[in-house]
Length: 237
Length: 243
Image (cartoon, chains in turn yellow, green):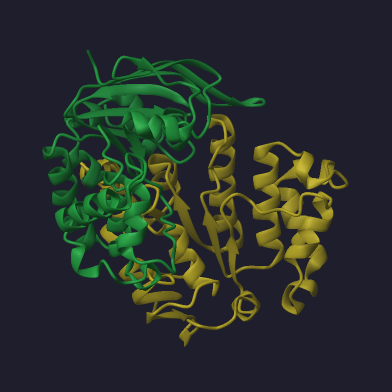
C-alpha cells in the first residue's frame, strides 16, 4: 500500500483551476520527483497535500487515512512536512531559533535534542552558525536551514519545493546529496518538486512530469532520463 | 524599417540588473514571442517598451520614433498598447464602459468612443455582454475584455503579457484563434507567455531571456533545440546527459 495516495485531485485558487484530475502514489521509503516547468501546478499540488489549499474534489490519503481538507497544523502533526519554495525562513531569528520553530509540534518537541543532532550531522555548517540571523546567511545555507527545520518536525514524508532554486551548480549538488542522505539514513520518504531535471532524477526512484496542471508522464527515473517527451513538456515542442 | 527596434536596453533596480543589454526587432505584421524562466525580466522589458518604467540605458524605436522614457499614455497614443497579466477592469462598470476607456486614447468624442468600443466587442464576440458589469464576467471573458480595451486604443503593436495565464487548457485552445484573428487585421503582436505550447504555436519568431539577458532567438524549432535554452529550462546537466 502507498504511504501517500493522491486520487483525482482538482484544485486551484478561487475561479482559477490549476490542478486537473491529478493522481499519484508515493510508497514508504521512496524518493519521488515531481518535475515540470513554471506554472505546471507543482507547488499547488504540494500545498494541496499539506492542507494549505482545500481541493475542489479528489482525495489525499496518508497512511490509510483521508487528509484532504484538514487544517495544515493537523497534517504537520501526522508527520507530513512541507519545506516551501523560497525557503520562507524567519529572517530576523537565529539559525537555532528557526530550527526550534520546526519542532513546534508535541511529537517533535519530545525528540528535540536527537533531531537537532541529526540536522547538525547533515549540515555541520548550521552548528557553526547557530547564533547567526537567518537573513544574513548565503542562499545555500538558508536552504540548509529550511530543510533542517523540516527535519526538526520529524517527518515521515518530507516534501521539498524547489530546494535547488537559485543556487550555484556546486551548492545544488550538495543539496541533492543531502536529500538523498535523509532518505537513506533516516528512511524518510521524500517528495521532491524540481525544475532541475537531471539532478532530481539522479537521486529519485520514480518521477512524475507535470504540464498545465496534469500529469503527462510517469515512470522510474531511469526510464525518464532518456525520455524525449520531457523536453517537450518543458518547452512545448 | 522594422516596426519595433529595442536596442541594448538595460533596466537596473539599484544593484539588480533586471534587463541586461537586450536587443530585439519586430517586423510589422509578425507575432513574436518572448519566453524565459521565472524572473528572467520579461515583464520588466514590457514595462520599458510600454513606458511604465524608463529604461536605465538603451534605445527603443517604434515606427521610426524614439519612445524610450516617454510616458505610457504618449506611447499608447503612438500605437503601442499592452495588456496586463492580472486583469483589473472597473468591476462595477459595464463591459462597454470598460472598452470605451481604451477608445478614449484616440478620440475625445463620446459617440466615436462608443462606436469603436462596439466594433471591437463585436470583433471579439463579446458584444452580447456589453451591458453586463465586468465583475460578473468569467475569467476567460475578463481576459477577452482586457483584449477589447487594448484593441479599442487602435494599436499598431499589441504587447500581450500572459494573456492566457489561469485559463484551462480548453480555454487556451479557444484563445489561440482570437489572437491570430487580431494579428490578421494588421496588428503586430509581441507575446509573453508561460504556456509553451501556446506561444510556440503562435509565434513565428521567439526571443529567449534568462537572468535578464537574451540567450537565443529564432523560429520555435531552432529555439527549443538550442543548448542554452534547454539549460535554462531543464538544468545544466540535462544537456550534458543527452549527448
